[in-house]
Image (cartoon, rainbow, N blue to C red; front, side, top):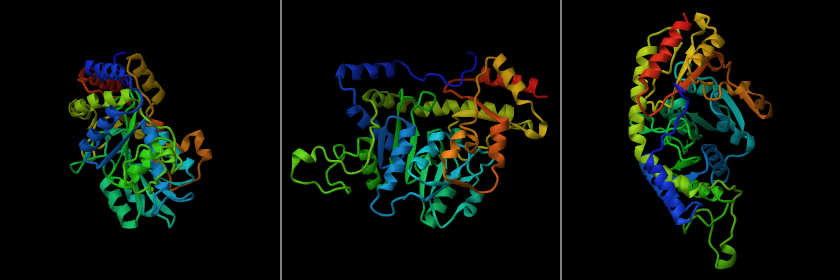
Amino acid sequence: MFYELAVSTWGQEEVDAIQRVVASNRFTMGDHVAEMERRFAAYFGARYAVMVNSGSSANLAGIAALFYKKQRPLQRGDEVIVPAISWSTTYHPLQQYGLKLRFVDVELDTLNMDVSRLEEALTPQTRMIMAVSILGNPAALDVMRAFADRHGLYLFEDNCESMDAELNGRKTGSFGDLGTFSFFFSHHIATMEGGMVVTDDEELFHLVKAIRAHGWTRDLPPHSPLFEPRDDDFFEAYRFIVPGYNLRPLEMSGAIGIEQLKKLPEFTVQRRKNLALFEQLFGQDDRFIIQRENGKSSAFSFPIILNPRCDPDRPRILNALKEADIRFRVITGGNFLRHDVIKYYDYTTVGPMTNADIAHDYGFFVGNHPFDLTPQIETLHGVLSQVFR
């Protein structure tokens, strides 16, 4: 394939990490996972990090934790402000915990939530904002954080597509009460499967750790704010304090993650070099709408919206990309309101989803990788320029 959507970023270091775990004969989470958590928290400027088995599980554990806080827990029927475009597991834990969604349209030029609609979205039942930075481009996290603080809301930051992006010199994923990350094959770092929850809140940290492993106390440090230990060690060793899941990562994923995290800064440098070329070729061409960078993007991919004013024939254009051996896909999940699953949700919308619909009907994205993509990006531009006259 000339231009893939996703490629492996592993080298011998990751293979050696797997072999060290195999030699240790310890496969469930252990010292490597703990070390990955320490390094990850330090890199992203968080007090705490909890590794789980996927970014989707990170969202699930984070939402669950907010339901078991001692003060101001979320409750079924509470409202959450969400963007119209994101991946499905941004939304599914909200539905599964009985929350009501308030959908807000995105900005066409950033693909992130239109924060000018936050005041309109706010109701007496609003308890949280779901902040999503789409495809490496930071959302207006500073605006959302200030709005959440002003109105006493939680800010949950789904950063699964935007690892190592920055806004005002601060890493995305660190603005929320909780932030989540994904280590899926196609993402900025890959650990087979895996994800992370970061927070500065000790209670949320302990809750996520318990929820990750059956709601159990075993993984919690002494003097946890969640419970008072008792004298009976026999039962104390198998004490359950909150409803939980088995979201534990493999020890292999922790070991691989340590090696991938070392490489992340250089990965991001190269992704941004590719982004600069992409912006140079497409940025001044009115036929194409590309992301306006907010802060410092980590350039997960290159989304392109065919300007509807130019009456594009998207099927014909996508077929030309196929013939040129260029892979493409829908922008994240498109407008989530247009998926069949929405019939199971309790939701309202804040006005029409005009921009989300345009991105859904006229958009797609191609991959970005942490190595030089000059031939691929130049070919992409040539094919699109030829077919979209």
